[in-house]
Image (cartoon, rainbow, N blue to C red; front, side, top):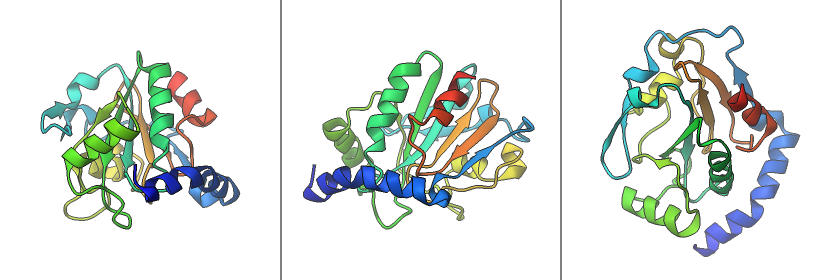
Length: 196
């Protein structure tokens, strides 16, 4: 872990405190009407960190938490919380981490470096995807394109506003929640949504 990363890990509690004090960092959006997607979540696919293709059809009957991640962010310590969440609910929960370099150049240069960083500093056992673009541009990864367009997922137009935004999909492939960066993966709102 670099000096910068150690400092970021130390200031993480302050970043979470800031999120509590300023509600825009703690935004939660909920699919209260249980709107079904217009395009099936299970028709999607994405590339794993090791270049293998993951067909989302195999995710049926599980809850899926999708998170855009970065190695050099004040919120990178959420990797620890994501791992704790995964260990608690891995019988019913899949976590897909999508590394991205969309916010102030905070991600490593390639997938090998990202995997090595996680293995060395945050030994995660949930799924690490290939680095991609998660914000609304022409090169937006197809999964985040689905997550951030209501004409695909049925209701949500919210793209990630920073690293470690979280989207929860239920066992039927319905996007149920968006949780902003300032919501800890172990927050009661996320745990309750997973247990529903």
